[in-house]
Amino acid sequence: MTQRTRPTVAVGALGGTIAMTSADGTAVVPTLTGELLAEAVPGLETIADIRAETLAMLPSGSLDERTVLAALAWAKDAVDAGAAGVVLTQGTDTLEESAYLVDLFWDRPEPLVVTGAMRSPQSPSADGPANLIAAMRCAVAPESRDRGVLVAFDDEIHQARWVAKTDSMSTGAFRSPVFGPIGRCVESQVVYGVNGGGRPPALVAAGLAERLQQPLPRVPLVATHLGDRGDVLDLVAASHPDGVVVAGFGAGHVSAAMAEAVGRAAARMPVVFASRTGSGPTGRAMYGYPGSEMDLVARGAIAAGWLPPVKARLLLWSALCAGETDQLREEFTQRGAP
Ligand code: ASP
Image 1 (spheres, protein in one colour):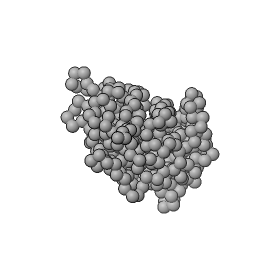
Image 2 (cartoon, rainbow, N blue to C red):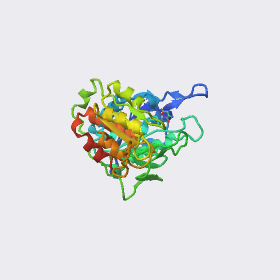
Image 3 (cartoon, rainbow, N blue to C red):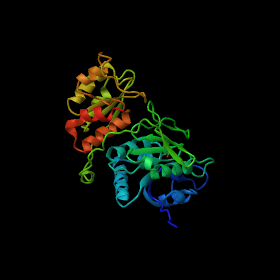
Image 4 (cartoon, protein in one colour):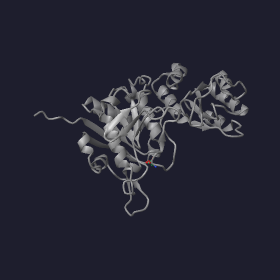
């Protein structure tokens, strides 16, 4: 009788609520290692042989680009060593950002699936175990290959490029506005819809490891607001960042005064504007008043397209890191589109 060999999945834990416990039954903090997380979920070992590792033990607000790209390097090593897929667990607060950052550089066909939990392991109806099982199933499914980085949460499968945390407390906190999830976890199966799932090629990561040893690009995000005089953007620009992203109103708009500040900043560094609405793209050719999308482009700014401000910031940061300074506009045209 031939024995079916189980695939190997590498599970990298970065912290977050899924790994948070309380010693006295009150507030929770990250405590669980990757090994403990995996051991605590009954049945996980029937899906795959698990190689668990603790990559960090942090609330996700304290992760940074370096930590996330170290997880990317670890994940690449794991698939090079034979893993069929990778699961990363982390806090939900910045999950939409780290999943996208890893996706930008993920150049392997093997699935890399990110998950977390909204309820800690000791709470009633903790969602971490179900999310981890869904992520594992997703990571071993042949149908998940060549789809880039995925987020498995609440039995839905989302693309890293569009997923967003859209609720502060609900277990169904993750949505992909406009585009929706590309798949579902049903019973023990992973099912993908017929549409969606395409993605641009990964950014070239050659030299990334060496680049990470040097000071990294500084790309702040500036949110505009009613009555914005542009003074905060001026202050930010005066601190010599490598680029700036502006979270604009509606289709990426700002006040006339802020538009002047955008022009001043764009003369010195790349400036990208995105929509703060959480859904829908920046405009292209609809409005022509001072502060509109057409005006901002004329002043030298780059439109983020369908990318929300936090993902636009990561694309600009990554393109600068990868030395793609001459092709920023093309990068946003390509990666900011569905
Ligand atoms: N509330 C967060 C979570 O879901 C905390 C964090 O992001 O680390 O994990």
